[in-house]
Amino acid sequence: MVASVIMKPTVYLDSSVPSYRLPQGDDPIIRARHMLTRQWWEEDLPRFSAFISQVVLDELKEGDPKRAAERLRLVDDFALLDVDEEVEEAALFHAKNLAMPSHDLRDAFHLALASVHEMEYLVTWNFAHLANASKRTHIEILNRRLHLSTPVICTPEELMLE
Image (tube, rainbow, N blue to C red; front, side):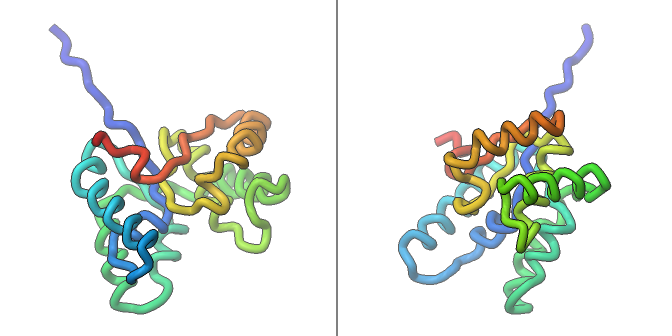
């Protein structure tokens, strides 16, 4: 009998997820996102193969050096997706076609990385540019033009089993 290999679903984490894994302050919404992220990280993330990119690492390095080091430690064991020519072209295409801001291409790169590398999920707390239902159709149309699949763009909360 041949044993079948069950692959874990793939997730690309943008920098907001490890950032929210750490306490953020007293704002009730921010605190709730931290608690949800912490629970998801501990209970649900092990069900997935997690990926990040150099773009994520660069963002996590910003700010207070102590907190930056803590954020970087959280993602130490995650695999890195390559930023290649196809990713660069897709990111620029998304920005040029108004799916992502053109003044700061990081969100465009997160979307391009997850799409080009065929991630099943892009996990984020970025509601302005990524986890935004009003942008979903536009993103899907642009990815079809690029012959790319579109990952499910969601928050950690949406991937919780309970």
